[in-house]
Length: 291
Length: 328
Figure (cartoon, rainbow over the protein chains, first blue to last red):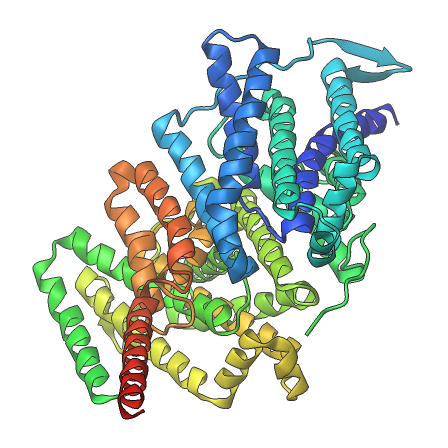
């Protein structure tokens, strides 16, 4: 039982990181119909930015803040302007293909231009272990879980409670009515891209101490973020959190009790079950199709 | 097919038959490699370009084909038994995978196939008793045909060329049959196709499974070509590359895969020493291509024609307007 609780808890910590990436995913989808295949690389680039800044002598908090600013410019503004805006009128698939191309370009650009090695990255939580009723918990897991949860909840309440957040939701639900109501639609969409970039930086900050900064770290992360988003419900921001945690916990338990070699197939298995029985996701609403 | 195309086809065939005599063994290997990937991506072009499904797990089927043949040949069975087994297995797996994934939006198939590819790769890597794990399977024999050994690289090249042409012709026939028309109908407007009585679910599933079977056949040829297989060529990355090959060449253009396979596998294989930079350029090029030429490289002639026609039409209009103006 203690083993189980331990696995469950560390799975939740990993899952909350997936949830951060998944949340960005669903926000982009809701606001602009963009499915970002480069989502994993959007986590990988900030990881390298932080590695580079720390190597240049910046302390971790400063490196993180600079990376967030940089990411909002590059992964938010430039990505929207350069890739999504010109392709928007062609529908969803060209954007998907372009982001696939982007992910190949980004990961190989880092591999060729910076390094093909894995770079260690010191986390923001010191190595400490707690022992509660026989259950061993690391401070890193606690901190990761708390930080990720805080971010997800902050994003949620920003969307639900502030005027800007509600305007963003209005844009996501119905762009035309939002325009009629005087909402600056392009700006709201940009905010979504900016939030996605910032969430990706936070995911990088939390995941890199475990995964190490490597050019191909984004591949599995991006896929799992998508699976988590679908499992939870693609059109529901809370679903991303649920989906992420389910995938993280499921992986950890399967690795311990079923087979460690097939850990990476867990997300797929869960995804297949969900789309078979509840295609709109656990918390999602059903969408009618339009002719 | 008009007369010009027939002449071009014969010229291309002649070039493909003559070229090997000017190539060293590595060149011949690359050429055969190209043909194998043309065959694989032709199947994917059916799924992606004609039926409009997004499949990102083609390399898994390619790998299943390769491993099926390798394992069967290691067990002493003939290549000629392995090849149809590979195609059939891929077809069936394609049906089983496509069935749940096609229930929902097309983009789900993309991720289901992506995840399936990961799972297939894990099986190839982990099940050592079956696939040899990371050590792979080596010394895969080449088949013989009517008593002729295809061991030599030139003989195997001719064999692969023949197979590619046969399966390309089959695909050509399929696309011109009522089935093929149904595939395109459901790509262009699935709801309309359904209202016209096309069983969308059945046809999408079929296009996906046939595409998978083509990958299986190509994989079988691949196993005998390289004679050593390990899980490395069958990763998610390879699948994504195959998808991009179709998109870059021109989805829905019959010869799109020919061009796509050249830029997607043959060039990077040849430029192996600078692979990361090549892929960086390739990825960037894909983004730019989507912005300027979303229908792929082979749409350039159509684009030019459309532009010329538009220009001619506007010239004719202004000439007519000028004439009317003169009369009035």
